Image 1: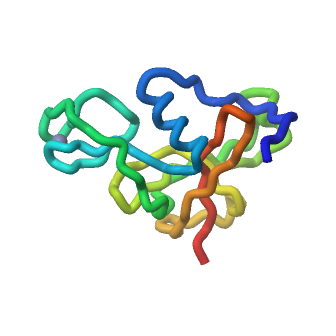
Image 2: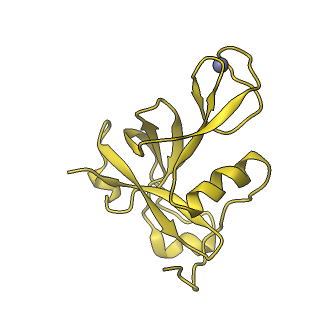
Image 3: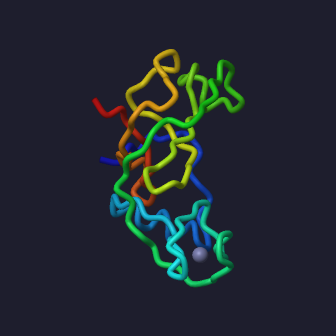
Length: 138
Ligand SMILES: [Zn+2]
């Protein structure tokens, strides 16, 4: 259920990112996959860095991965984040190999561990935007 009081910034959506977030709204995590060589890529872009092909599909990720890195914010850089301090933006490496910046929904900064297994969950923050976040896998 969308929270009408959501105050944090939402992604600027356009071009390929509009397609990425359209799938998120349907609670599907999809990334570009080169139809020439099969390489996955993220952030979305025109060309495969591996083989140079411009051909791709939006392939569905299994939504499973592990914590690759993070940083912890202890001061709000924007006033809207003050209620969330401390928080940790996390880089998750998906099993398909792509990495994305995201949030963990159920893990405090001091509980984070490299390699922690996680799975995607979608947070419907507005009627238009669903953010892909992750939770710890037991
Ligand atoms: Zn390729």
